[in-house]
Length: 193
Image (cartoon, rainbow, N blue to C red; front, side, top):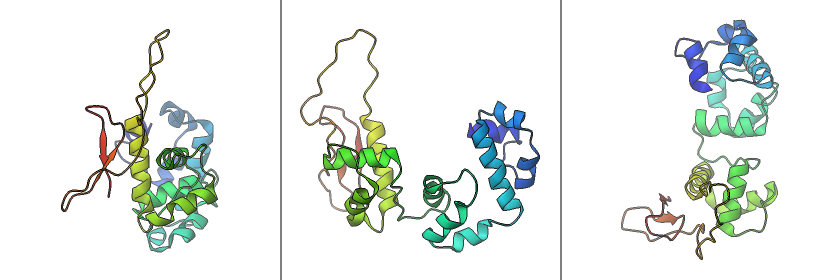
């Protein structure tokens, strides 16, 4: 969707005024839902009307950024956390509402269910001041460990003991350890910090 949106605006991110002037049909052709279009219009208006300012957002602390951007229609805490992590490059963000982070923490700690936000906060306390980085590894570990789709009617294979476990691997001098995703031969391994 992002590539189609860029292509629709000459390969660039459109200025707020240009995005506001775009017809909904043009944005729908990029693959955006009506709700996402409404959110983009609201976000463009907030920047165009100087309710939000990129230079100001960079200088704000994390909580102030979340407070500032969540006043815009369609921008909630999850979107604010993604902005902090991926656009502003903040190293210590924990998106407690992100399903992938919760699922990764569940696997890492062997929990019977997805952790609630308060439980995730407690589990992630030792990750400070690099909780964003820990989240990247949780997401990556889940991507690497995702089961392959089996053909219809194929027998279900039982995983080998320990498959899917997430534990630090050996540490070499000056190099990070490894996070084994599955102990099988040629298993994907993700470096940890």
